Image (tube, rainbow, N blue to C red):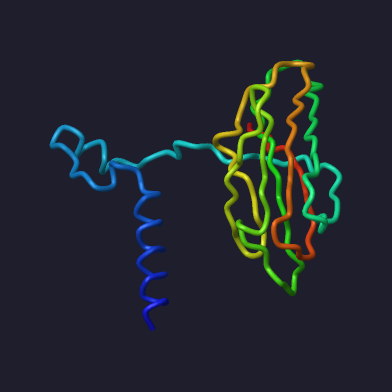
Length: 163
């Protein structure tokens, strides 16, 4: 079926585009020793999450504001990352990234935030949202969610905490 072949190629090209450029180059002799040594993770995973109040996925095709607020009540700086999850019902239908539009208020302008998808859950990436929140400061991040294709679901904002 031509459509299947085209989609397969598109998925393969998308997967290749996501790889770092280093994956396509041979290591130099000087770096060969380093490459064969055990590697530590370059990006640390969150140690926990703070779940904020969830809400049903709106179905009116209007833009709805979501505010992620987290206060660092400790005496030390914390590395945190706000995240939005849009969860499909357990039995489907499962949402696709094109079913919703998510924007973040950055520098006074709304900028589209890309959504990834896994097992019926759409989510924002953590790496680009990671920041250091100083002791006794508050993180407030504004988002705007517009449902393009109405479907049942839940909007779950949360904050990732790093050790």
